[in-house]
Length: 124
Picture (spheres, rainbow, N blue to C red):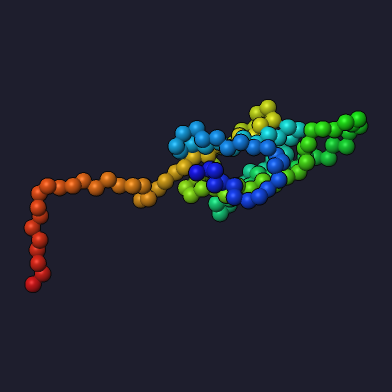
């Protein structure tokens, strides 16, 4: 289901994984080395999950700067009934936890079969 999460052609930055923990639970892991949790914003609206980050200007005296911490906005289209539960930022990896929550009215319902015939009442 989450393979359909992102249907846009987007740049590969930042790198991310989509993992399926079981039939109802999923994770999006995004590599964000160089960012702090306060640099990151996560929002859901109208079936879209948007992750944005902007690093405060760090114009240090680098001889070589190979760690990209450039601003980005990454959007994922959430599959039907997909809800965001939580987000954690540990060791430079942002993990967003999701689950699929199907309303009772939309779940398949098993209908039992009776072997007794009911009388039909005809209207006069």
